[in-house]
Image (cartoon, rainbow, N blue to C red; front, side):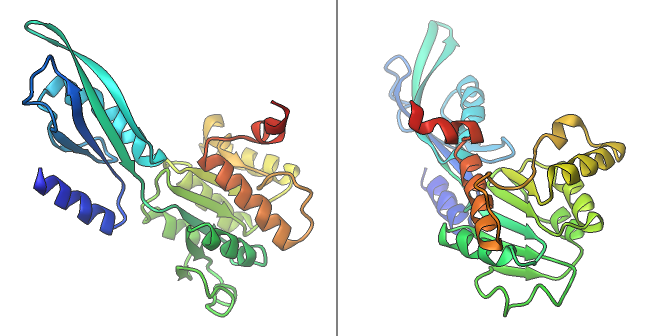
Length: 261
């Protein structure tokens, strides 16, 4: 057990996502199971055991989900045994990696968007192939500034449900290759700048390049909540609000109607 906690400590230090499952009750009074621990990783592999292979298999999927929500919960699982069904109470706690915002395109909107994201404790990565835009003078708060072709950069990154991607270049030669990479991965949010007409034309081109309707539906565009934004700061606010809403499982309709309940 001590080794598992040491590994958990190290994973948290490295800002890696993981979940810890612990048997807290049940098992037909079999005390051997009480306190058994298991670490569950994002790829559904695990270390340790709760003392029952069938129970381990049931818990792994639920534990994996908590990695991205950060939930702490207790669930009861029923497992068949030679003497009949046994119920186990298992406490699961997810430890998500810190939320990351990848901003593709270091234009005017990216500056206030970085400020808002850092205020909300996001790790911010700016990616732009144009060295004149992606400078430390323009983005003193960014955690990383990468001057390379965006699609080549994101292809090598650890994209996961704690990752949000805002594509702001408004240039198909940057936007579309990047979106193709991002939409092939399981990210928490992806938005792309542009009008409804621009989105429709971009979707049609991406569809011809092999993307599915389901993938295209994941793109938030026009990017950001509709708050009537008419300058870079307001647009950045709208984008950040949409990212936070998505992170907490909210959509535009629920946000607009929350005070009508």
